[in-house]
Length: 253
Image 1 (cartoon, rainbow, N blue to C red):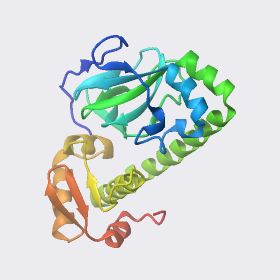
Image 2: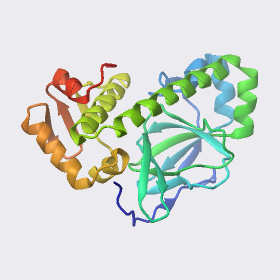
Image 3: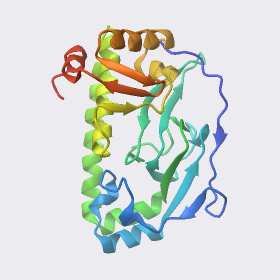
């Protein structure tokens, strides 16, 4: 079950010369390069990428793209967090997923954006125009292979998410969600048992097909069971990883 979304997002800056946008000069030292598709490029090839890349700031509440708009760029998020939102005919919203540092946006067979892409924290993306990315892919076959690998990973993640959404118990859904975020934190070099939640309870609810009240009650229940601690509203500490894995009913971890 999703809830109405009444917020109005701001448009993100699109002019490279405008505030918030700047040429990217230091791809090799990017803190998320090991997670990004550009990790397939050699130092010399990175220079070709830098020449066609713009670093774009996205303030909290801004919109990178609207559903139905023509796709003109691909993006790698380097800081912050975005959400992928689809608004239903009756005004309710469904959050398809969250985009975190190192994620690539642009693997689509459609010429138009399928979701609204909104910043849920102060964020930054690296932006490359589609024709320029096409040229890089043709020049550097290993980049094409990296994109194919990413597409396969996203397909696996979509299948896992569909399985999680099909579960009946809210605790199973929330446990699975927290474990996946913890695995992602570990890839970023952060302690895997301390999870930062850039999204609010309402966003989690609209992603998992629950109400915000159910999500809040489930967090409280998991805390009472000694599985997690909640030191801050947007921080979860996993106290019993094995117990959370058992609850998630997922043996893939």
